[in-house]
Image (cartoon, rainbow, N blue to C red):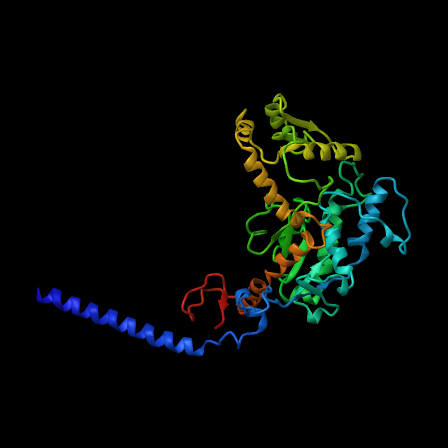
Length: 400
């Protein structure tokens, strides 16, 4: 019993000691913290702001590389030539119109940074013309357009345009830039919207912030939600500008697209088989054309739901959708209307600004990773170095 009493006494003393230390430290820290009047304006919480406005955040400074035209306007020219267009002179190439396709975000971002700063009011980033002033570097390569220059068109070996050569040329150019070499590309932003864009050099640009539509074809060491930004597709049909409601939407579910798009239509063909016999479902085969875009627009605007997921169980999807009440559908419509600007590249407060906002939020992590890399010392060791706390078999030693 005496032993138990002694243990309890020591435990009580330890608890009291911890509480005392906590009180002392807490008081010390509280005295050292600045008051709201001492904080910079951008750090004051919105509810403490006398004017009731959102806090002002410093704009991230972005430098856009002046890439050789072969990586920008030259790709528009190549796309035109491959389709029978007349080759323009070098002086006229900047007047060529960028072709519409679902990954044309790269054009909207490029155009945004080329606008005068006075026209970019409210943007979370500020374009700077001196790379020494930049927080981030934007590489305006039209990587998705390059991928479709010869899409579906056979090219004789050694002739015609080569997306692979473009990628290699871009990498050679980037590696020649001191700003790329400084942080191994970590503070660079590169568009790779099409899942196959830049596939040949992904391992060499994976440190950069990649603008991607999905991570389906990227390895975990190439892309992640932590360092990259997911961007929306560009609209290829007209937006719905009417009021919310279901009265004019007589179709339950609509889909229109290429039935045999990937893997010979392994998934889509099964979807067609599952859904095409349903009375209140419209699912149609169609490729890119003005006529098909008009038909798709009409179909989407007169349907309660539009197909996106691959659900292949017969009857599962339509039974689930038919159970959804009108009140719930109207709620979905209101929510979609409230956020649709984030998916609209032509909205001045839409997708472009949101992408730049997402990019700017990566800056603290980029600085952390860049500083960490500078603290790593590479040593050519033939044996493990035991001079630090932990043996490092790789030969990389973190300086302290």
